[in-house]
Length: 427
Image 1 (tube, rainbow, N blue to C red):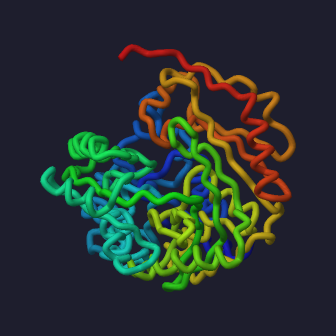
Image 2 (cartoon, rainbow, N blue to C red):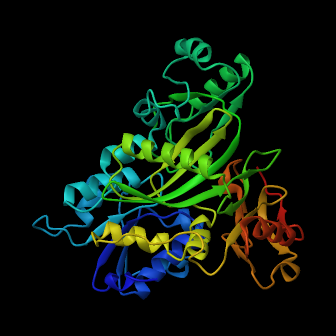
Image 3 (spheres, helix red, strand yellow):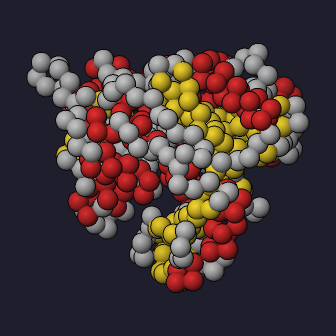
């Protein structure tokens, strides 16, 4: 990897974090190259569960931890400026869905590099993305339902089955597939009553209703520099049959060249439609018989070790690439499939059989082998799987192989012998 020596002497503020090792490692690697990292958090319990101080958490290994109201861009701005209003940092960045908008607004106020405030808002507020894609063949039928009286017209316009979801949430929280009008009405009643995000921001209770499309779903990993987007490739998405949670991924998906060109083009158009200036994007696309449909654009790096797969297969580190861009360092990622040490990689997500207190993990000795590793983001004593969304995972089995398919087979084989044991807790 080249160019990362340009971290030396720079100072980067990171607003909150996602909860996986890849995000912690990205911070540590930037520090290894000489970057000073300031971490802004509203509270430590989100990361520690109140069971240990942040200093004992991997996120605690930064140069400074600032306790700030990270829901308020003005508070973030104040924390990062001196008495004369001059920026104390060279860049500001967030990969937390709930804080990318605050971060973009603070960065623009400081004159620092950013994806663009309007771009981030359009990606996070999914109805704004739909509006930006109006007339694009990769869009789907949709309606934003702001009151119960609008639901019947929305169902008639979108058709059944449909998808109902909060317009601004993450980790698949609140996403409902509705096959009947009665199910859509039930989803409306449930979702319209949610007036706080998972991180506590106020929500108006609106519900986004979208056309349900069938096909093969992939995510597209990309990095935009000066409005021009570099594509690393597509990642497979395998869903658990009962829960519909993301249970495995592999990279890169071997798509027919014409299909890949159509997918790549649809993502490029979506990013241009929202005026995405720079930085990573994780775009979910459904490949249908009538062409690709853009499901969501996420203005951040992906979770579930997808960025680790990109690093191993493409020979560039998206976490470091994104941080250099946020620092205003001229940097174009050079990673392409085949440039890294392996041809393919895969991850299988570990879920407990039941929610409760994480007691122990069984089968590790038989799972870990050359080319296969297991990482946990929970430890015994933690409460796990309290919600039915992608936060229910306890860890990952990661495998590398000659192809993505071979790596996925190896990861599944290793994961098959692992059990996450939990103990029921009182309601």
